[in-house]
Image 1: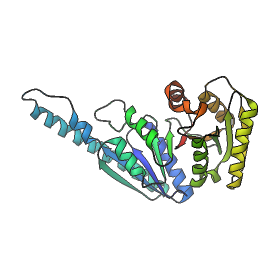
Image 2: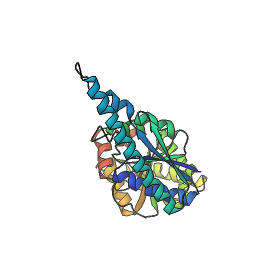
Image 3: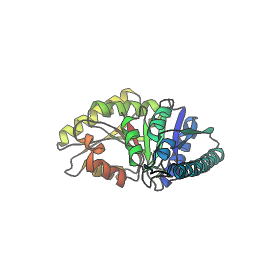
Image 4: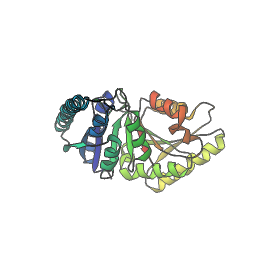
Length: 278
């Protein structure tokens, strides 16, 4: 069950949406929230090589950026705690100095679930875009992670559980049930395959396992020549899903969701939070 939820804090709209979703999950599960603000001192102080006489300027520049980072972090923390108080959810903010990806992964080890805004930028004072942190966290997270887009989130009760029979998709299924989130939504198992019969067999296998875990599920076998991401999003739209669940490193065709253009397509096009589990 979910008792401790970690939310990565920075200034993007995706993080605002992630906070809103985290509050909803915490309220429904009587869980507590931790908002993590990161001061990226290693990257700030790394900077560029300076010539003779430049060290004094670099020191002043570093100190100014660190001050700006701390001020912005306090603002992120303040907004987060205000929202938690208004929602009646127990929460605290933690400010850590360190490399963003490593810091998030370390803190996530002590929580049951993490939420991060899509395109969250934890290097906000030095970089316009921070794809490296997002990529490392998604690929190495030890606990389930929900990636949240910037748009207003749906309130639909349905969830798409993407399943291809791989070890990764089986783990995602079990972890999703273990969190207790499955009890709050109608579960739809979706398998996309070139063969409708194979898709039906795999989806039915997942539904049976869910049944053994006390969760009822509806089966969808989808035959499509389009990318898996597009097929999943289409089904999610049809059933008004509020969440998509999948294994982060599935074998077979679902593996492509996290590598190359298909993964990028899903991340860019989704309007639905993605529950990822290794």
